[in-house]
Every structure is written in structure tokens, then in C-alpha cells.
Length: 291
Image (cartoon, rainbow, N blue to C red; front, side, top):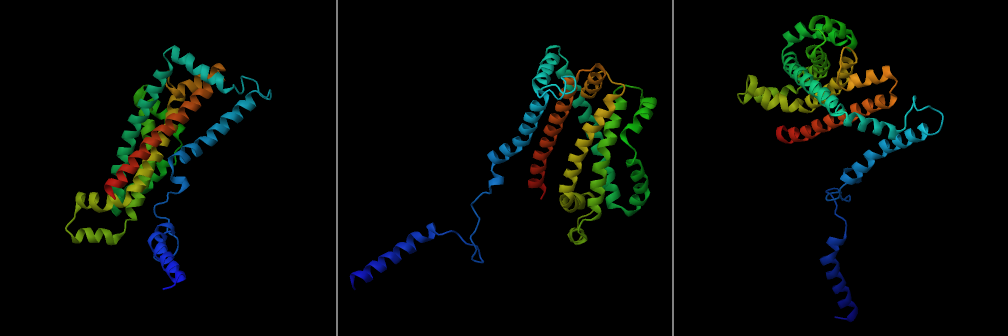
């Protein structure tokens, strides 16, 4: 064998040995495979950085507008004034109290409203009879604006905690009820029949077949309900309340304390997002467990 032939043979062995690791992986169709490579948007640092860009841009725009002279401090206080208002309320022992009271009202009202929404939504979604019985009436009640309930609840329950929590529960009820009932009506009938063929009935059929099938819709309804609970909290606390973030909002507006008014808005946004993030973590756990 000549020197050239030996060199070619050695090169072929080298390529066959190391070429597989150097060449890109390909899928069954011969296209380059993306297995083992994470997308940029799935990287945690990218998600955190990307999620902070818009809030930072809003904060910068806010600061520039507040210091431009176009608005007075009574119209648009700078961000540092809002921070100082937060420290002032914290020093007085009011900030933590207002946050705790509002969070308690939201969580209790959300638990009651979402729980009733899950139960009634399941009943209506699984039974044509109960759908006919409840459907049109609940659809009409859902169209009633939140503020329309306030004078009636105050008349019935006075201005205590019961009226506020009831209003929040009403707000949390309808998103869950609607999502659950609608999703259960559209569960694949073949899945249900397959479950019945294996002897599943009643609650066992619901927890084994139907609930996992509608789980994403259920959790979406819960997240919408939680957002509604924060919205209805403001409606409840704007009227006939002496504590809470909604009270801070209305009291600051009446007293011309725009810095505290902005503080209340920022806190509502932060805690609304925080509670939604907690539900998002629950969603990931539930999807892994049930599906």
C-alpha cells in the first residue's frame, strides 16, 4: 500500500471515530436535531432579565416625566416620593396592617368563591339538566357590575367584613364556574366512554378522566378568579372601609396625597402578580401530578 493510500485510510478512520461527535445530530428526516439545546427564551436569566425590562422602562419614564416640569408633584410625584410614603406608613405601623387586611380579605373571598365555582361548574358541566336549570340565570347575574352589588350587600350585611368578603367571593366565583362548566362540556366523549368501559363511574370517573382533561382550564379559571378577587377588593374597600389598600387608595385621593395613591396602586400590582405567580407554581405541580 502506498503512502497516499495509508494517509487516506488513516483520515477515514479519524473521521469515522471523531466525526460523529463533531457533526451535528440529525433527526429521523435528516434535519439537524435541536435535542440537548435549550432555547434562549427558556433560560432563567433571560426570562428574568426580559421580564424586568418593561418595569424598568416604565420607572425611568415615570421619573423623567415627574422631573420634566410638565406635571406638578401633586399630579405626578417622583418614584422616590412614593418610596418615602411607604416608609412613612411603615413607621406608623399602617403599611403592613393594610397589606395584611387586604390579603386576608382576598384569600378568604377567593377560597369561598373559587370553591363554589368549582362545585357548581362541575355540576353544570356534567349534567345537561342542571345546565338548563342554572345556566341562563347565572349568565344574567354574571353581567351585573361589581359596584352594583355594594349598596345591596351593605343593606343586608352592614359595613363589616361579611359584605366585603361576599363581594370578593362573587368576583372569584364566575371565572371559575364559567371555565370549569365550559371545559367539562367539551371533554372528549371517547375518553369518557373508555373510562366507563373500565368500570369507572361517578367521582372515580371525574377524578381519573374528566378532571385531568380539564385541568389547564380549571387553573386558568383560578388565575382569572384571583385577579378578579383583587379587583373586587378595591370595589369593596373603596366604599365603607377604614383599613386596607383600597381604603388607602380612596383616602389618599380625598386628602390629595398622590404619593400614597401611587403607592396603593403599585402595591396592588405587586401583590396581584405575586399571588398569580404562586398559582403558576401550583399549575406546574398539578400538571405534573395529574397529566
